[in-house]
Length: 78
Image (cartoon, rainbow, N blue to C red; front, side):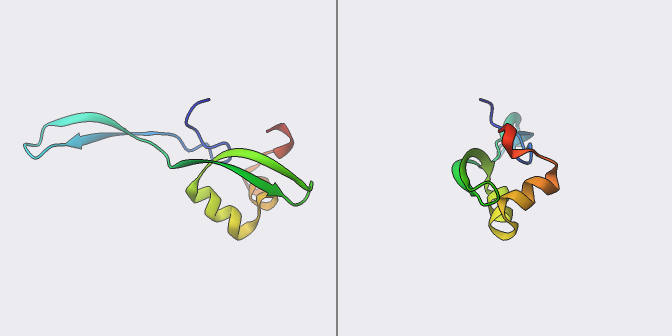
């Protein structure tokens, strides 16, 4: 499975590593993905998701069902 958040779709960003002598080389800035088992209160079951830490923070604030609905994601398909 690729390094993409299953809720937000966040993925790696292309960037440049700049040395002291200002030599620029390409690098990837990966998303901070975490594999988590989250409780889905509406369906009363656990769901395994690979999500970013930013999405986890929002899930703590809003709740998994409400957050997925605001993103237009059907959790039954995951």
